[in-house]
Image (cartoon, rainbow, N blue to C red; front, side):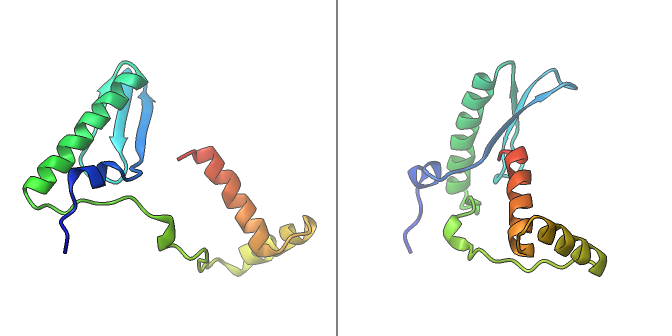
Length: 122
């Protein structure tokens, strides 16, 4: 088995999150896939630079100590179908709304999820 190196991990599409904190009066940043990491700064650019530096440090330290390094989700790991369970009342309401819009329940749910994901913007 080939041991993965720093460049491999840095080439993966990790999720950098940067948000304003009213409480701390600064931007806070973290890498979603990596535990116990957070940085702050007065600008998004400063936080992004801090995150890149922390990312390199996290991976380097983990490799040196043979710690497991979480990798981001990969699209090929998913097949495009999920099992969704709900109450019969919600199922009934979904069927009525889907019919009203001239869609299947699956298409209606997929569109609703797509809209919610746009709002989340991850």
